[in-house]
Image 1 (cartoon, rainbow, N blue to C red):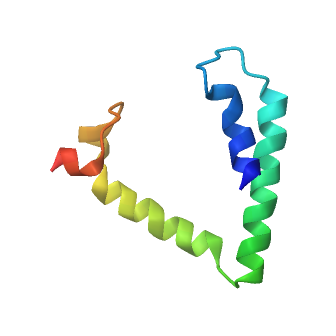
Image 2: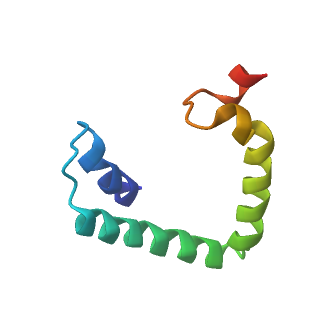
Length: 76
């Protein structure tokens, strides 16, 4: 999906002066695609978002993982 690539483009070279409006517009484009796809496939995104947050909380306990960039398997 090209829209997701456009969101990441300003960050490719660690540019600390990111145009927030540009990123906001690209994120809105990505969100529109996601919402449309979820609608077409009859997927309840709120439901699956809650499930994913709970799974991630188990994989990445905040007291152990906060501020660390490692994969969950490295914490076990």
